[in-house]
Image (cartoon, rainbow, N blue to C red; front, side, top):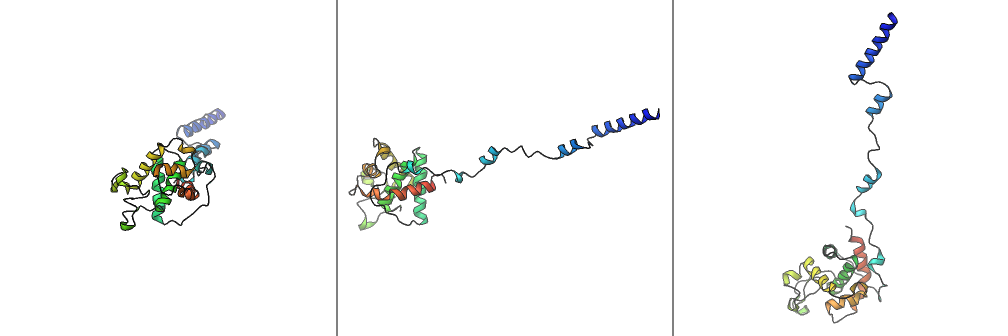
Length: 203
């Protein structure tokens, strides 16, 4: 009888411990230790900054070899900001990286990536802004042309009307839009323009 009572007491104590949440042994350790497998590697990778995205492939930026000797200038913060504005407007227009290369190379030739106002006696007719567009030629008002987004969008609108611009040498595509007195001058800026797009496209 004493043995039976002892067994019932033990079972009763164990049942009380289980229902009250006082659990001993390996089960208690397992419940108290949160699993580290609830954060998959894919989730961790998805949290990586967008700035770490791969740069555009140079073969997409310069699909053909550059033409002729290349020029390069040192850019200040304002010029870099103008290059970024051109890139942003190109992306907003839904056009690829190559269009941004052509746009920046054109601006490098026309204004050295400076959003120029009227230069007085030194002005080329009434040319203004990053692309030296002329109000008298229908590009827009002076206020519009000196807005980087508007000016870039206007240039890109002209570029899209050039049949086969994607496969043209850069200087031919730019010249078809700009109708410059120096049609071959745009070619020299292709490498620097491509480098700027590669650096800032995913920023």
